[in-house]
Length: 221
Image (cartoon, rainbow, N blue to C red; front, side, top):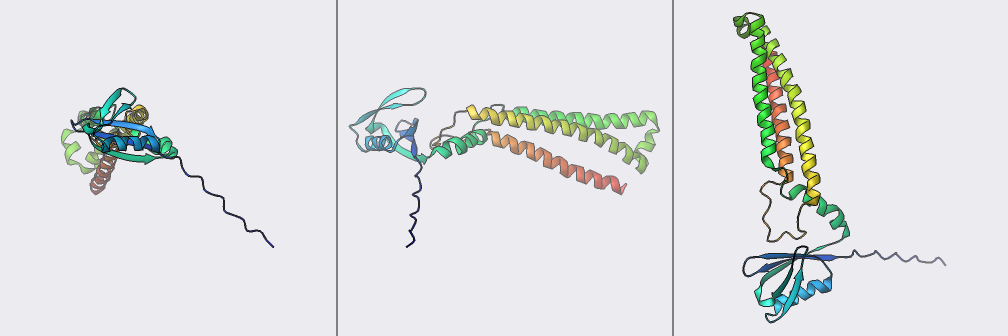
């Protein structure tokens, strides 16, 4: 007789709990890395007005009363979430360390230098030749415009490298940011690190569209 092989029981993930304790006076306390028993103690505290409990987080120790608690929300998580998902959330959704102004300033500088560079190329062409020919000779105008746009494309490449480098630095700094596992009661970031990535991506897409349009116009000349 052949033996029936019993399936190996799957190991259950070790769950921990992150609480957001909403106080009646408006403050929200965040407590993480709790066992099920510890989580249940906080729930029991909220159910009984006459009980009290010591609440300790990374920065303070509080003595709170059950009657002061308005709500407790809970989020269960395992080791995989803590080691993989949560660091990604901090990198993407926490408040940007570099801010939006740095990225917008880099883009504005690019636009300004590009405008001046194009003017400079046309000015040089007018100095070397006839002013009227530069603007009224389609072939000469197209050649001059291509030179100016080639200069802008070179500047664009350096600008994109700089923006991507800033994004990478901002994302890495996010690993050290304060970002609770249970975000209930916390306001979303005014300028998240992910939104700065979108700004960089939008800048690249807009320039590519402009480049396609400009190439089409030059071919028509």
